[in-house]
Picture 1 (tube, rainbow, N blue to C red):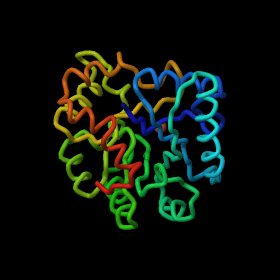
Picture 2: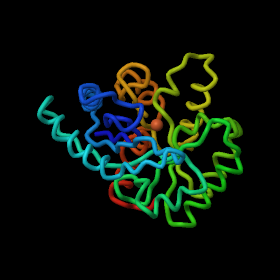
Picture 3: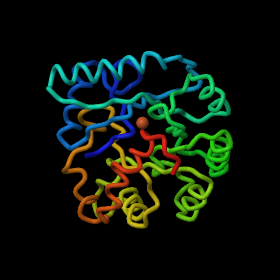
Picture 4: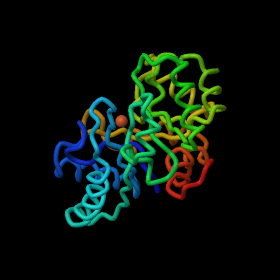
Length: 239
Ligand SMILES: [Fe+2]
């Protein structure tokens, strides 16, 4: 089975699923690829100061129920957020305004693509200092990480690294796709996830998009990336 830890699948809370129809289609497609657990991660943008925590929890339960009714599919959907990092992130986490992943100490954190390396380091240290376990979302987007040594350093600081399945679908000459494949082959990545927002542009996990992954990576590592490390989040295991 698979666990998708990065999903904008709840309707009406961010620019992911537009309505329940789209949300259920995304969940049903995920299930066809063997996903039986999802951590829903609506964006938390600090400048909006929205308090969505209770709504997210309720929508997770409702999504499970609606999916069962509409498609006869059982899936566990845990609450979470994808928090845009700011100097207030730790306070917002402590106040319960930003949700951790499945109520663990793991937190999904995103940055702007031009983020500086020093900000990434600060975020990793800051969150670890306060006993959170940061997962950096779609690390392939951050331009300051072109040097692979920096990935190693961030991991040593306690950051966990996630890439999007859509980021290694490019052809032979696609720079980003080659970079992500190299990182995966070297074993630097902790999670592969969909970051699904809809059915077309950023769709759910599917077997055709996992073909490279399934043929080129060691099966134990595949299992960690799409299941084992995510199960540690749900079980509350700290690495
Ligand atoms: Fe996302």
